[in-house]
Amino acid sequence: MTVAFFKRKETKLIEALDKDPQNTENYLRLGKLYFLNGEYEKAADIYRRGLKVSPRDISLLFNYAVDREAENESDSAKELYLEILSIDPNNKPTLDRLDKITSF
Image (cartoon, rainbow, N blue to C red; front, side):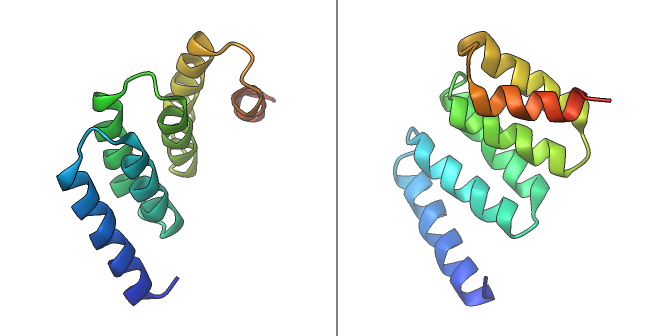
């Protein structure tokens, strides 16, 4: 991802969040942008902000958990995956990720 492309996307998403801070899709997109750029703490911050707006948003929870895994924070990731399963007990991607981080 080029720096110019990243900055352009980042600016647009931040502007979109400023206009509509209730739109969780923009938190998800900005968090993914930071994640793909290796900016895991920025991604985590954005996911947390989005979860304040929509605490039971499975996409935000899942991406936040994956982000925590990338930062070697398996315990935090596990808590987030368990939270998802409390909302949707049969969520296959979550079950798969949880199995991955809890297998020995």
